[in-house]
Image (cartoon, rainbow, N blue to C red; front, side):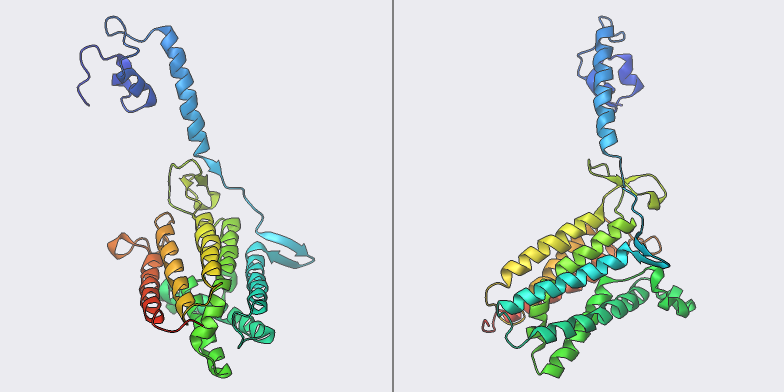
Length: 321
């Protein structure tokens, strides 16, 4: 304990680091002979402790527990998470039609957009599931291979889904005789709002919560089982990977850009936002933090950023379209 002087009050000795202790350290409430503070001072103590309790309460916002089932039609149950996937692909379609109407990619038409979305659904589901299996729990699924098919148990990887969509775009571009980056530059600005819908689904499900914190907007997720206030990291991802990245790409792609540059900005933007949000997101309990104190999501995002920067520099040498 720091040296407090002979006239330090007993309340300092009682709890030096508390709000009360800090007030006593100021010397305002020292008694005439180092005794306890007068009665009037205790009123101020109670008032300050009430303020402290108020801020403590603000730091303990409780997660609004949603029913994971959005709608029941007889024996059919429609889950919020699946509904968010549908909302995401619907947003991709609406935004895609807007880009086509503005003539951003004359080589593509409405039917091409519909085909791309249909096959991208397969790429997202298959790639996302296999990515989760390979990147996060390879040992477990090697021992339980049939559970790879148990999609209803959850377990999807964005990075795996991205690889799946890239494969779809490669095959589509080859079939249509187009450059891969012509297709990817068209698709890239459509993706973020779909990702945002998925993150909203994570929040509704009460999954992928953040690390413990004392920020005023921290939230207690009952599913975590420990009652600690945590970062609502799903909402951070909704705001950054969804809304902010969409606004950036939609603005950037509104003018003619060198081929590949819109795709490059998507890789840089998503990788950077995901890397930053991972500092607030609770690591998977079966993985924890990996080398360098970073999570698996951060390690998978670094190659995205590096590839995006390299592609941006390379594409800058190409003519604008």
